[in-house]
Amino acid sequence: MDSYTNVYYIGNHIELLVGEHEAGVRQFSIFNTDSGIEVEISENAAKAMCITPDSTITEDNWEDFCTVRGIFTEDN
Image 1 (cartoon, rainbow, N blue to C red):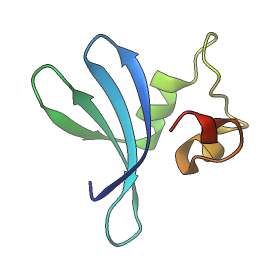
Image 2 (image 1 turned 60 degrees about the vertical axis):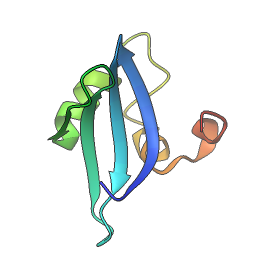
Image 3 (image 1 turned 45 degrees about the vertical axis):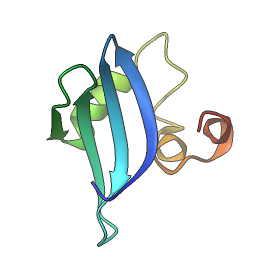
Image 4 (image 1 turned 180 degrees about the vertical axis):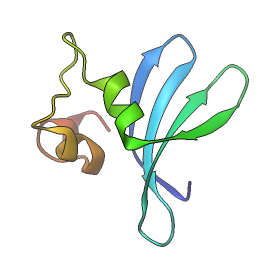
């Protein structure tokens, strides 16, 4: 991934990274901070991990999360 726009901490040593390739294509990856392994995943898989009952991320503000707008501007 060329440029990260946002990070969501899923659990111990696991982060969801949102970013873009140089071509402007959005990409989602799971990153294990302990092992250094990064694996690209689909947007639907990313949503399934981030949109939970106890999360501030919802279907309505998903685009804001991905582009760091609205309430998510304070997170970065």
